[in-house]
Length: 447
Image (cartoon, rainbow, N blue to C red; front, top):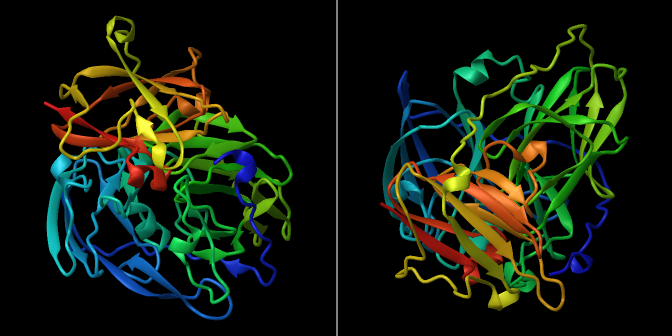
């Protein structure tokens, strides 16, 4: 689907709504180096809009899910329960874990079944997420509400003087576009398009027309593109600068000053908006083009002024890239004809092989077609990679941190440096969920 065809958001008149915040899930038990959770898929009804409630799906609730907190070095136990009438999986997007607990299409949980997973957290602080990844039904299940957040914390998050009061100056924003019919229902089949389902209504954490009230201080937004297919171009309504402090897999080396940020499906970014000079009663909007994503009102003042830390992280630079073989891959097609290297997904076929712990270079080319082609967000399971180059050029500063999803424009070639920390079979695919479901996905076996 070309940019010109993407439906615009309809202005939904009516009152603003206080931003809903996901609950932070209470562990079943927690010790210093161990934490245990229970996560259940369920159907329910949610008041998304005035009028009738909407039939939805959620984790431990009717829509979306709670936040799972875990720390680097902890052993995590999760009991997953599927209370749907169809199979699902529990995929931990961005976690570096073995493939048998990654929740790809090889690990379905049948209706009314449970599955226990255990892993150790072997990565730095980051905002990750979880969602289904069952064969052929991922897009629909996410569309009806199955998605939630993971906060990985470590000594660096403890040490850095950043906004971290949940719901006060630190807010998660799960951005999703949805079509609500005349009865306020999410009719996925009626909205279906193999190039991605786009909605005319923007929901943030399941909230229509959301607002937050904050003090005149620095505010942290953890942005998650949870849409099936839509890219967002985020900016402030007054064109003020903001600072990106983290990408998919953790903190950037230092805050990157920006006025606009593109976020593709599956990508995350953490940004800081500095409201220290804003008077009481002032409002500022986070925008996607002409659409207000979030209304931020300054209510209450504070005299505390804080400098942003100059140094956030140390991301290792490898000198070996030039000597490594480059493995090439081509993304192509639209609709039902999407492919990677001319092939569609086959669970019985291994498409790539890598060695555990060894650095690899993948070069991904997004082949244009006669119509120009379309951008594909490319996601790899089981690791965090680095973008080496875009069309031979160094990536922008905000893409020089850890990533697990990268937007590749039509005609563009992107080089990634990857290292799989665990053995097993991992997916790589387009994160337009409809493309993934129709077969724009491959398998890498790590030995």
